[in-house]
Length: 207
Image 1 (tube, rainbow, N blue to C red):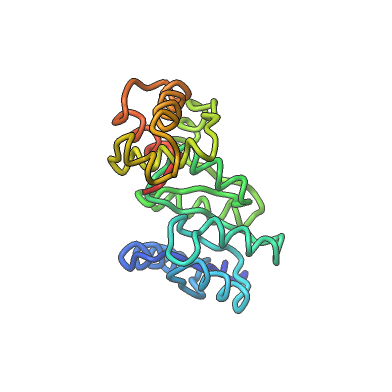
Image 2 (image 1 turned 120 degrees about the vertical axis):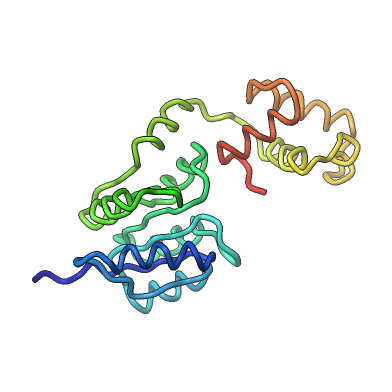
């Protein structure tokens, strides 16, 4: 019998981590060798165990999953990584690919997709469930928002008015208004609620 695929699971939410670990350990050809609760611990446990495949939650305390992915790949370019997230926004997926992960899954993933992803990545292939691939294709255009516009958009999503945004970013209120007008144009939306909703759904910003 061939050796089992050795897996590191990095996930800060206990219930999600237990669920993923349980599914993996039920497979005859897989075993979870370590569990991390944040990005820094994921790097440390990767160094210790050198797993065949690592599952990284994108949003974790201390260091995000994508920051951990970048750090792991800098030390171990052949590392095989899967990004895991609650949301499947197209910008989240693009950032994950850019960080070097080979598969992207949402936490509501079917058990079959999780197992397929692990097998694919272990074999050196990439994996993206069909519904996420469709979403990525549907949003071909990346909104060309400047770093400042993204800062403004985050504050809009927090419910701040123009005056508050101007105060927070040390800019004139007219400048804040101009940024918001530009954001609406680039996202193709009519108001602040639409802008915030789209930005969160697509993974352009995270609250």
